Length: 165
Image 1 (cartoon, rainbow, N blue to C red):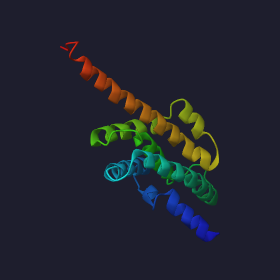
Image 2: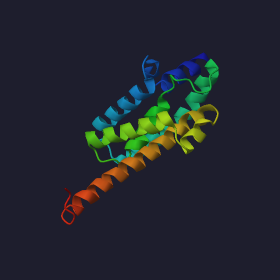
Image 3: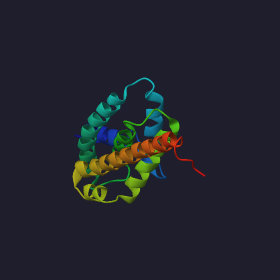
Image 4: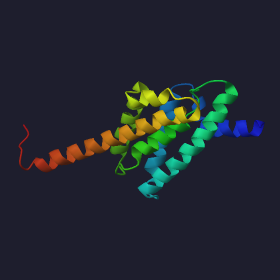
């Protein structure tokens, strides 16, 4: 039992990144963004989703075990949810540092301020609640980033017709 709690701690804190003293969630999200940026060259975007899906289910399990073992509902050192949410936010984004960073920023804003459905998911108990608010934040960040990409493309293409001053 002690080994399972220890393994859950290691995985849920993403190898103790969650113990970072300042903004561990943001730090983990940024590392997830950097990992995506360097790995995306070698793997297809679908694989990002598959990895995120596996990490989601693993995250629900280990977050439940670890949070119950320390007696807290949503400990700040659990950051596997940030990793999963960030990779969802990056799933369909073109491989570009700028667009990836924009997605990172949108994800952090949604995760920190928790508007609408994100707050509702955050109020759920156990590992599912720990993970789901970041999943929804990731989906919204993905939608916002993709919308911005399409808006800029539309404006750029329309520039031949509409003269911006």
